[in-house]
Image 1 (cartoon, rainbow, N blue to C red):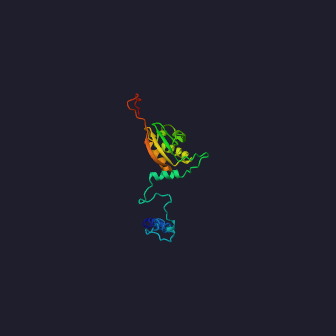
Image 2 (cartoon, helix red, strand yellow):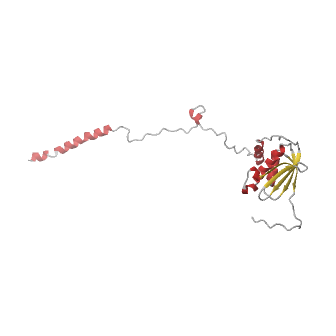
Image 3 (cartoon, rainbow, N blue to C red):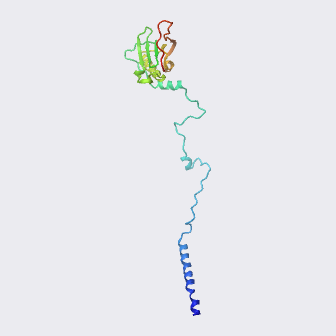
Length: 211
């Protein structure tokens, strides 16, 4: 009986001994570098050489990029002159060959009218904000007055107009911009007069405008 009791724990030791080779087989089945993450290749911080492939792929500044800080930006007068230089003035069929004339600018709060006449007062060319294509509140802007003056000046220049006298009437915002447009398009301005009517305690004035 004593021999049988001593022999009983023997199978447990064998089971443990059998389990060890199984664990060794599992460890051998795993690849060597499975658990370790692969190291990324190091990137060099040095600038690429001139003849290398990286230098060829380097981005170049775009052609339409903004100019450097040292370069002066173009002025408004230069941009206006470039805009007007793009449109050519064609000589009219029945050209009257009038060299000098008078430009009458009527600038009100709601519209801008420009008419160019000869020295006797016969109209050669005229334009208004509505004719140029503006509607509503845009008719009274300074930009609309500039376009109106350009349109009237082209009509007069097609008849040979080269120099003008400017007569301005009204309190609108298009007074100065119309005169600058005449100068930028190529007309020579000899005189500028303000012919806005001023009352001398005559008739009763109109009611004050509400803004």
